Image (cartoon, rainbow over the protein chains, first blue to last red):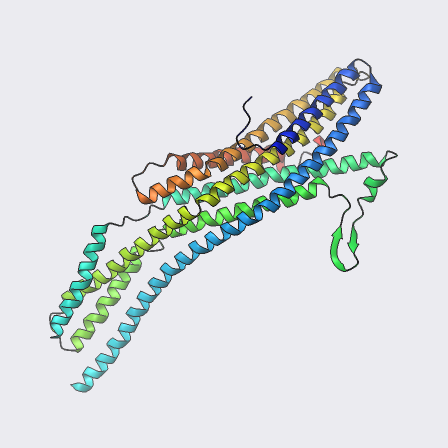
Amino acid sequence: MTPIKGITEQEEILNTLINQKADCYKLVVTLKMQNETTEADEVKKKALVLSATIDDLLGKSMDEWVVDTNALLNDLTIVNNEIKAAIDQINKALKTAENVVKFLKNIDKVIDIASKILL
Amino acid sequence: MRQNNIRMIIAIPLAASVLLTLLGCPKANPKPFIQFSESIQELRTGADAALTINDEENQERFIEQTAAASLTSEGADVINNLMLTTDPRDPFAWHMEKTPLFMKSQSFRSGVYTLNTALVKYAELLKELSSPELLSTEQFDDLTKDLNANLGSASTSLGIKDAGKELAIFSVAATEILHTYLEKQRKDALLEALKENHDNLQELAKRMQHAVRLATSNLNQNYTDESGKLIEILADPKTKDLNKKKDQVRKLVEINQRYVHRIAVMQALHESYAALPRVNSDMIKLVENPKFGASTLKEIFENGKHLKNLHDELVKAEKPDGDTKEGEK
C-alpha cells in the first residue's frame, strides 16, 4: 500500500503499534477458542501494555503539535491584522471623502452668508 | 477667470478618470470568497466534532482502565494519579503525576480549534474585502449628490451662472476617481493578502493534515480497544446462547459501521485541508483575471458540503434523540 503523503516516522510507529494491538486482540480470541486461557490472558496483558504505550505516544505527538503550531498561529494573526488594516484604510478614505463633502457644505454656508452681506 | 479655474478643476479629474478607466480595474467577484468562508467554517465544525468524540471516548477509556487497574495489586500508582497536587509557591498551579490522554487530547482539540479560527478569520476578512458593500454604489451616489448640491449652491451664491452642469460633471468625475482608486486599492490589498499568506496556508495545510492523521490514529486506538473487548466476549466458549451471540455480533457490526463513517469524515477533512494551498493559488488567479475558472474553489465548496452531510449523519448516529449511546460504552 502507498504511504499517505506527509506521514512522519513517529506516526508510522504509532499506527504499527495500533495494528499490533489489534493482532493481540485477535490472538486472544484464537487462544480462547482453543481453550488456551492462560496464554490468552498473557497476550491480553500485552495488548493492555501496548494500549498504554500508544496512549503515551499519542499524547506526546499531540503536545508536540500544539507547541509547533504556535509560530504559525502568530504569522496568521499578523496577516489577518494586515487585511483588517487594509479594510480600515478603505473605510477611512471613504470617511475622509464624506468629511470633505461636509467641509464643503460648511464653506458653502459661509459663502452664502457672506454673499448676502455683500449684496 | 472663475469660469476658467472651474474648467481646469473639471479637466484634471476627468483626465485622471479616463486614465484609471483605461488602466482597467474590474471589481473583485465576492462569490468565491463567500464560498471559501463557508467551507472553512464547515471544516472547523467538522474537525471540532470529530475531535470531541475522540475526547469523550478517551475519557471513558481512562475511567474504565483506571477502575480495572484499581482491582489489581499494581493499582496503587494509577489510583494515586487521580489526586491532583499543587505547587507551594503557586496556589493556582495544579499537577498530575501522569497526564491522561483525554486531557492532552482536549488541549490538542483546543489548539486545532484556535488555528482553524485564525483560518476562519482570514476567510471572513477576505470576504469582507471583496464584498460590494465595502465600496457600495449607493455610497458613491450619495457622495456625488452631496457634492453636487454643495457646489451648485455655492456657485449660485457667488453669482456664477451656468456653472451647475460643469460642476456636476466635476463631482461625478471626482467620486468616480475615488471609487476607481479605492477599487484598485481593494484589489491590490486582496492580492497582497492572498500572496503574502500563501506560504502560511501551505504550512497550515500540512499541520492540519497532520492533526487529522493524529486524530485518526486516536480514533483507531479507541476503536481497537472497544472492538477487541467485544470480540473477546464473543469468543467466550462458556456462552452457548445463540441469541446472546447474535446481539454481540450485531453490536460489533454497528461499531464497525460507525467507525467506517468516522474514518470517512477524517478522510474528507484530510482532503479538504490538502486542497487549501491550491484554493489560495486559484483565488490569486481569479483576482488577477475574473474570467479564470477556478475548479478548486468548487472542489473545496463541495468538500465542505460533503463534510457537513457526513458530520450531520455522524451527530445523528452518535446522539440519537440527543443522548449519547451509553449502552455501548
